[in-house]
Length: 217
Image (cartoon, rainbow, N blue to C red; front, side, top):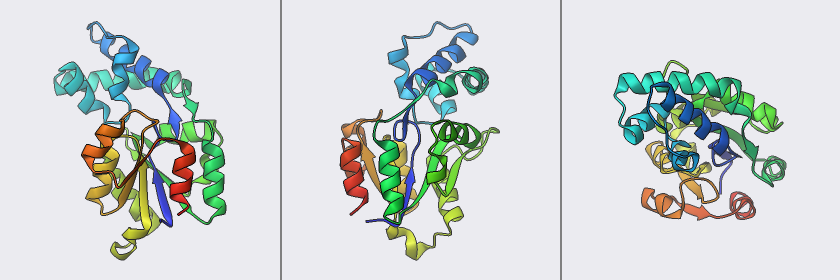
């Protein structure tokens, strides 16, 4: 099905719920606003933070930038390690590599954080490239991240049918489509089947076992 596979990080390779939601709450409270319960903050997992603070909290862009800075203050020290790799993930990555697949990460998370997380779970070596956003707020859109990931792999227009994106949110599907590649959605993350279907995912799977079978086709 694909020679090159790009993976989203949050909600696809690892479950970052505790670290992200606690850091979001810290960002909201630092501006003097009451924060919802942690479970209500799961929509922040995946999309660009600046957008979410404005959309979810109704912050101005200036307030959202301050909240992002406070979020990163906590996340860098503590939240980054409040994370769990999904069961069976490392086995799947090993199986794909052994099958000759070239693997990469394409995340809206700053690439420095992504590198730390992947190294922490000892799965960094499975990936040829890790592409993320920059701390200065550039390259945060998923389409931009995927575009850069494709550039790093040396993918030409004619190669795009052999490239696949894997992710749990609509942003992964939309970003893939913007770059002319297919996307497999996973429901074990935070988007859900309905969100992925509406975004136009080419295929949707519920488990890592199903994902493995799909990616080996």
